[in-house]
Image 1 (tube, rainbow, N blue to C red):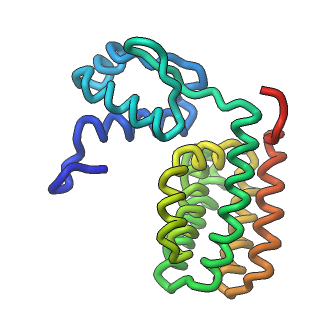
Image 2: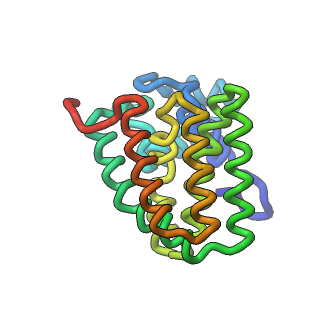
Length: 214
């Protein structure tokens, strides 16, 4: 989070930059994160880098190593299956509540994420499309109007954003999101649930994600 008066601290800036680089694929799974090198690259001391790495370990994106370095997490098949199972349990409730409780403002925010994703998908901009797709899911959580779901989403956010970025069929996913948006807007709970189950199943197979050997 930003520091008081809207000024971002060095630690928050380093966390944000490293998180974005990991989620966008600029830093590959297994790549080293060395305090000294990161501090030099980012123009900060090693203290905010050390604190940022601790934060990213807590978010589930980084694996600590002894002394002063870490690595970008390599998600195993078992890790991914665990995320899929948790996602399935939470999102069915979240999307159904969003269909029931949404406001005009919430729909506007959801549509903005959808339009950004659709435009990026059409342009072949995978980074922007993946970010907007994750924004779409987070907007649905906000629309659900359940504080505990919001807290759970925040805890899992980085790992879920990683999971939602593991596909290459940008236009297909954007199209599925459009169908979900339309059903939410109509408050059609049964259709939302059916579409969501199809959406999660198609996502599971876009890159062969599922439980298997580590």
